[in-house]
Amino acid sequence: MDDAMRAETVMITGAGGDEIEAYLAQPLERGPVGGVVVIHHMPGYDEPTKEITRRFAARGYLALCPNLYWREAPGASPDDAAATARAAGGVPDDRLVGDVGGAAAHLRALESSNGKVATIGYCSGGRQSFLAACRLPLDAAVDCYGAFVVAAPPEGAPVNVKPVVQLAKDLSCPLLGLFGAEDQFPPPAEVAQLEKVLADLGKNYSFLIYEGAGHAFFSTDRPSYRPEAAKEGWERIWEFFGRYLDG
Image 1 (cartoon, rainbow, N blue to C red):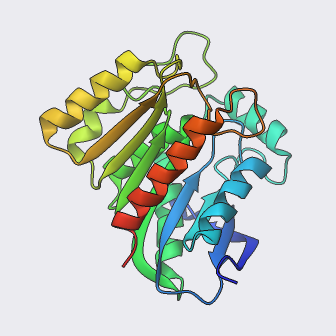
Image 2: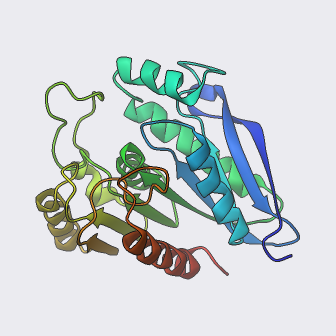
């Protein structure tokens, strides 16, 4: 079967040489193929994110999702791990870059890899996908409604992060951004600001804003799910990765 795959929990080397848990899905009897580092959303390393990881493998890509909360709560449930991470202010940016870099290296080392690796992230992972693409050599990156790229979080937000728009000059690869017109984190005005920065720098990017969609419109298990926007978004992702990861 064309969509045959194997999915399993593995340990990878992350930031600082730490061994962290990750979820690996890979197609069977295909290769060489590109790889995708899936950066989970703030709710954590949960089953919906693992389902997305398997979806990439079914499509013919190597896919790896590192558990960014492993150090704070090894073996804990996704809800408990996410609560622990939020209490600590979220994942430090330098550690995130190290963990994503380790995941990318793990994918490139697989026998069926063609050497190309992209990132994709949702919610907080969208910001982190952009951050990783500015700090690591990647072949493509997708930002799905990542907030706090341009503006700092409001007071009382569950993450302690700073804007990273100033890193846009170092963007190493083409960037696809998928956003909702009804979203407040990020609102369309901030998306427009980021777009202007990228345009002024001459970067290779494409942004799409979906009317009637708010935050987390890809999440099939949440009231925010918008089927039409999600379907169109997935088509854009497949087209984008087909261009930059295949071959």
